[in-house]
Image 1 (tube, helix red, strand yellow):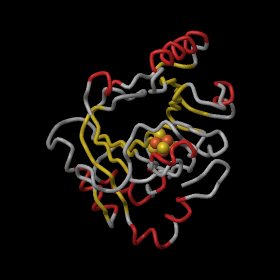
Image 2: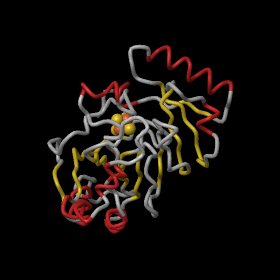
Image 3: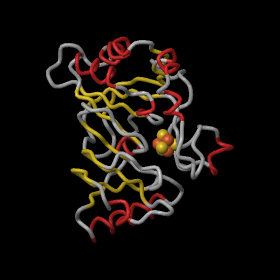
Length: 233
Ligand code: SF4
């Protein structure tokens, strides 16, 4: 796990030849509606990759981690339809099997985590395209995205470790300590900029803060976590 100020990380390890042996570590795969961001409401297969470079998932380390407000269990491969997949084609077929067969419309997959870009590579993107999928990724932005991903959503948690500064959607959990909205927008190139209220004990207050920020600067728009509001997964 990266600690504050540490710019190396798990990705460097995972990009070594050993990674080929490790293959893809998947926490869970499930079919649902995208809950947040510009694509909210869209049916999608979610593929949650195990592991994150901003937190190791252990509660005793949360306060010292780069990202301390995570709401996701990304540890291990023991979730529904999770597991270890040695080949990109094997994982792509596994994902494709969750999409309703024979229905019209473009299949859509969201690669999320954890930090999916620790593991997503060209081979997987190509294999998912071969299965007919439009491929989206949700990343903390600390690793450059492979070419060919169709929808890049970056949710930065650290200005210091932010590498992927362009894409389709910047979805900022707000407020975050040590950030200003101007600093987040600076030197970025996204098609859409969204503010999403931090989901902690003051979520109602944060929601009002986000609404006020969007009204003040219309370049931002509000993103709510509809899956939590509606109770869908
Ligand atoms: S970067 Fe994302 S997955 Fe990683 S700890 Fe933070 S919220 Fe969780």
